[in-house]
Image (cartoon, rainbow, N blue to C red; front, side, top):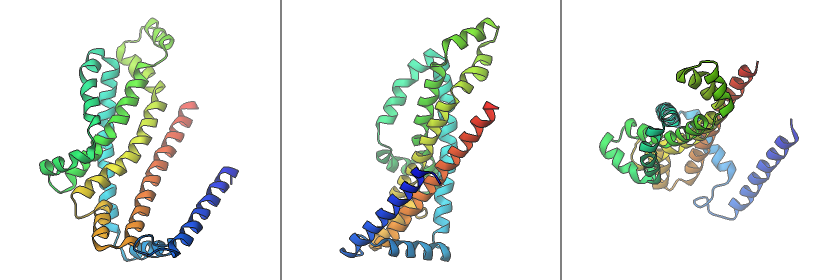
Length: 247
């Protein structure tokens, strides 16, 4: 194990110890001890209480991430390649991102109902911008010398795009994808905050209504684990993708 990983685990243990000591000085309603939270978490997992909520939130994240990322990459390619489209759409894209999605959530629920669709739309919109912005940057800032070389060799616009610009910009696009994964978790949970009877976000609201703080903390841990696992999965895919490209 690397030295940095050891220090990271030591810091984690120190935080848990400080949390446990601090919790003993407070009411469980205000700050439950880690031992209480872990017990609640294990009981919920073993009984299957969390299962439908985890599946619902995970499905919203995956669908929203897929749709938002696909739209973001396609829009980014178009805006990066065609200056007219970039100048036409960019002000509207920026304006749409300036509005907090939490403020739009009630409107989406009014339009799409309290089901999964409204949460998927919110998640997709939050994921859209990082992919779009990074893709535009990747396409625009391709090495001009390499672009000129492709032109000299007789490559057309599509060949230059798919054989040079997109492969060269893949690190930037994947960086945007890693950001989008984390934001997808936020989008799904925020959507469930506003309206939903199922999902980890809805479970947090329910625990708040029941004044069950250990349950709330345990759900927060589940959300953290879910986001971390998804991020690490994308990082794993990215690392192996670049390893394959380098061989």
